[in-house]
Image 1 (cartoon, one colour):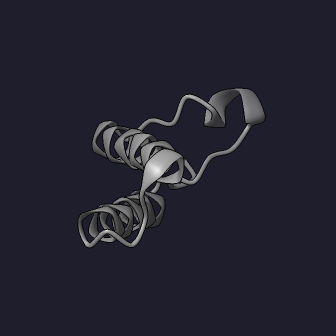
Image 2 (cartoon, helix red, strand yellow; image 1 turned 135 degrees about the horizontal axis):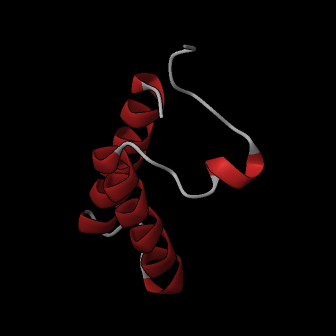
Length: 63
């Protein structure tokens, strides 16, 4: 997973958290987006996205 991909995922997660804590989103939508934000944070910190391998996606540097 490339650096830009990781940064975008973290930014999206932060936006979701801000929207939740400012009560812009709530209910089922909020729960779904919070779970997605959590997944984005974990995959960004680990640098691995489990969906990328079967889909053949590589956002990292070419070797």
